Length: 473
Image (cartoon, rainbow, N blue to C red; front, side, top):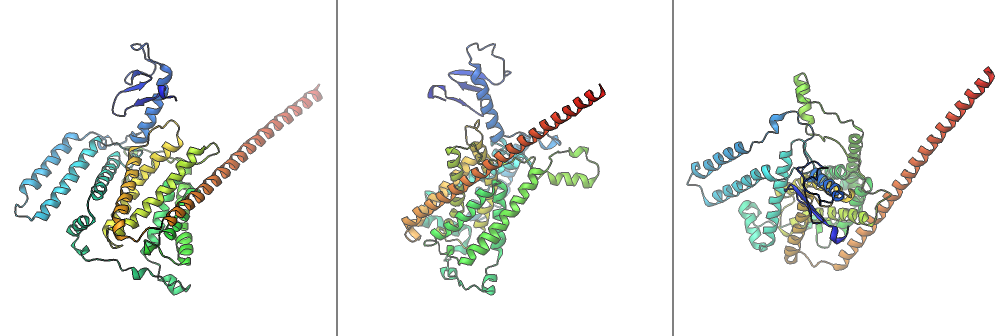
């Protein structure tokens, strides 16, 4: 599309602009009776782009079985919120201390913001179990982005004082780096001592990544690249120092490997599953109704991935490489933030952040996938935009505070890390394309062979009938 042909559309408005022409979306698609100068050739393109944005950023519920859960409750929410604010602002004990009043005010701001989000924020690409939940997720992600940006503009000492105010037990805490000096003797007792709850956490994490990425090659590249990330950044993060058997056996094979295998197994099961949803009102028996209610927390449908295919160009390759690099950065930020903010490994902030990033990552991945693979999708989804904004803001906080507490970053190590990421990512992606190209060629060859066999059977049947007719004569 040339610069003079560019158009725009707004998800909030009801009109589209294309080549200096306005098209009213409230009219039928072919109705241009009031706009004789409208270029109808471009309306279809704009309409397709609008529909793609609508399904990717504001997905509607396809079939509503219980209308009571999807009726607007704006007035009810306003009244309930007002009652709660009046109660906590006026009825609460006036003798509470300053810390409690500040904490109550912060929670009130969060509650009002999320309540507003229930009304105005987009649903995102998912509607199960309910669109309101994904609006809440979007609202929480925006609040977390605000928090990280606020931290970015503060001094590290002031941020630590805020953390001490929330959790006084953090005052005076310092990481003991001597416990990260591993004994690398290859003995069963030594290996068994490394088995802890982090093994389960790694397994669940890579299973979840496999579920949202749905591609063996990309997930494998992320796994190998992460182990190399630990190797290249071990000079500033001593907890990245690991034994060779810890990296190869416990991480790559057991935790990451089994997690990815189980995740891809679930992906395969969900792909071949037949999705037919029956209304809960049509189900008889309490047990059946409870089972249908539980299934509401499962996907409505499942889309087969096609990150890379034989027709993929250079931009698709770059987009998937950015995805692999982004996964490395969002994981690396978790360890950098723990280091620069002097947080213990078991602190609830670390768990809350990991869970939050995981929940945000699901709709963000779907929106990024649609943006990369669908040529009619011209805009990155809002949740994906917030996800990348969080990743960049966290990285900036780590860089700003890391200059004060981290050892000097070895620039050659960073360059080597990036080059390794690029080389392995490109190799895996090219391998995926070659594999899918061969698979595509085999499918075409099988179809041609089946067509030839059918043609041969028809000719043979015709020949038999002709011989029978001549014999009868």
